[in-house]
Length: 187
Image 1 (cartoon, rainbow, N blue to C red):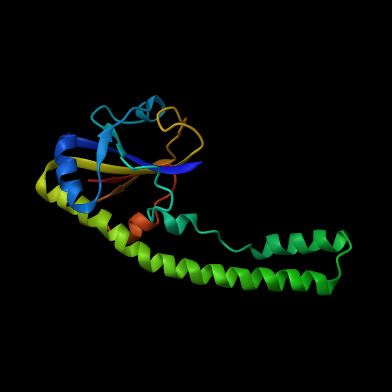
Image 2 (cartoon, rainbow, N blue to C red; image 1 turned 180 degrees about the vertical axis):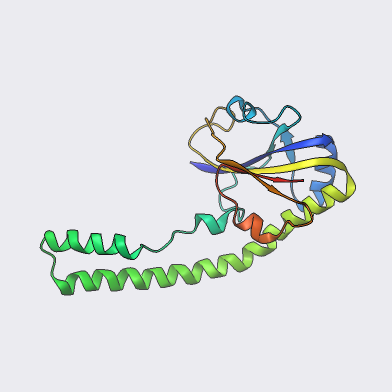
């Protein structure tokens, strides 16, 4: 269905303080409730949702992990074997593979272009987080990226892991390489 960005905060901070800093970066948040996520949080963590007009589809957060990887050599060999069993000729199989390789090359080029534009958007997130820690008494700020098949407040999300990053070590690569359903926690 759609990507939405949620997360957590802890420390002596209010949503109003977060949003006053977020205004500068085009980011707004609100407290949110999802019992399945909240059961997995620590007692001092507050669940939040990044407000958006429709959804966060197309977000550069985690885009490096969403990239469709080319088929592995083993998968490709297995597919070729199946095509041969179906009676495909070597020439027909080669045309299919050539077409796929050409398409993969075009997609890789598009992906490289989108990576360059994504750095600016992700840098905005990084700058926001740095200012948040420099200007407030926030203890932790967490980001959760999830592809929703239902409602944001009723989706049954199981957190894969909690990825901890020191605020001084946060980089654009951390944000670009976020994994779906892994809570990235900056402290």
